[in-house]
Amino acid sequence: MPGLRIDGYVIVSADGMLANADHVMPDQLNFEGDKRFFTAALDRADLIVHGRHSGEDQPNAPNRRRVIVTRSIAGLAPDPSNRRAILWNPAGAAFEAACDLAGVDSGTVAIIGGPDVFGMFMDRYDTFFLSQAPRVRLPGGEPCFPGVPERSPQQILASHGLKAGEARVLDPAHDVTVTPWRRAA
Image 1 (tube, rainbow, N blue to C red):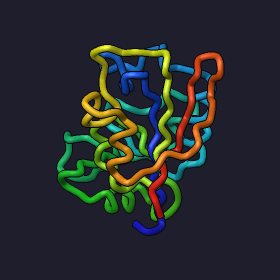
Image 2: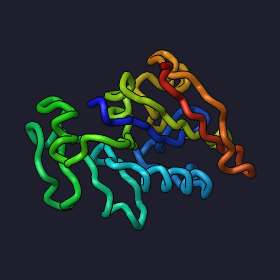
Image 3: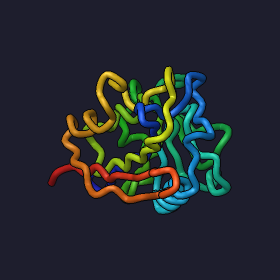
């Protein structure tokens, strides 16, 4: 949709993981600076897209319009547990149809995971905000993107036409940064 801007957000460990081996984001990846950055981005977004096991645990979460990616339905359906959300099966409906049902035809869409959801939008991101916690390692964890750890998250973003901008420090005590990866114009 021409009126939509698609941005991705993830924080990863030094080895490119977004969760531990139990598919849970561990406390080791929780940093106040990153949480503030992420929360502000979601507060500005017009639509949040994530998988069934992703999301954000924040006070404003129930007020956000969202699309939840799932294979449990044929195409599109209202989420019976959240009046501000719809369920979307990409195998049965186009993303544009999901946005239409959500009532969003312009503005910013924030993609927040998990790995398969991130992968579906690789060629559509305007910007992907890659936060990194270089002192954290999660051996056997859940990779942030399909193709990690064979390739780094940075290599994957670059292979999809995104270029790294200037990194911003989010937590100087732990060297946590966020780098905007933007699509070349």
